[in-house]
Length: 407
Image 1: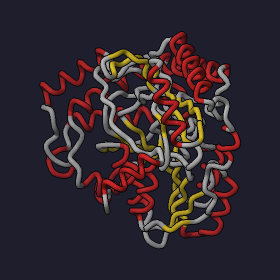
Image 2: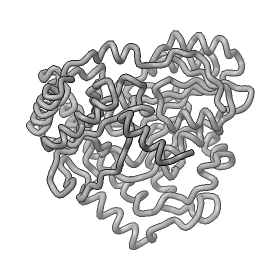
Image 3: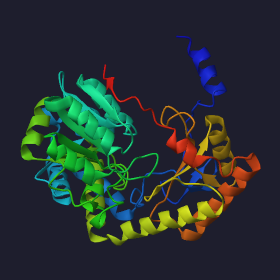
Image 4: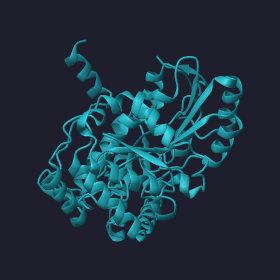
């Protein structure tokens, strides 16, 4: 492959990416390229990554436990501090057991591939996280990709698979659209067809449900979902991930899940930070309410500017533009106006639905969110892309092929 030629192709198609360096801690505002900008593209939803108590917990753990775990969990890297967080996470999710992973990508790719194999079928929403998609591929199972949130299509696939149906996996909150999976209907189908159900709560933990316990808890389905996956690096302000389920599931994953077996355990400072953030969330559930209120204020302000935000009801608020080059132009224009909101383009989202993925934080001020909406609206009008055909683009964005075989 000619790397230079491929990079030029990416530039010409509006898909070239580069790293931007933030010069301050995460927060409602950050320093970027030497100036303060309003941050609207962070997953630090509750504003805990820079909270003084969370920082102190990480610092104390570094002094007590060191900066690294030193080995994988099955060698010498499984430490008391890991077990303590696992117990707290299991209680939080209402499950018997929890298991820590180094990242959400490792958790999803490892768990999906461990729970489905050759001769079986795994069912995946077409807008699921890339880590779930890769887990399906690694599993060597047949993968039925059902149309987004379409439970009739899912049911058709389950009937077709029969006894080969092994696992249904879905995001709880979809990371690029901010909408919520129809979990009650999916859980009913999984029970009727004898198929395990796994829900990725990466963007729901700390944002939905009683006390921020996620979309599964919001739907009252704790006893009907077999596997709950969550991350420590978003609302909990740290790094890493976890999977909750039965004690038997945990034992099985310890013995079969390759990303767990062959990865160094999460570092103690990150584990301690997540534990303190979880304690904060349990003690201060009002932060979840503030996050929801801020997200609604942002949606209302964007609509007032003529920008359509789809059917999001969470802290993730997409402003869908269409073409990749237009989304990039809007992102750059917004940054010039002091609003940092990244353009999201294929392959992260389907062609024709490139967007600015805005995220509210509990620590944003409503007046700043309204100002950001005004700046985005002004920039979009200047570029001639305000309004758009967002509903039509969303309706036609997803691939409709019912079945693909994972390589």
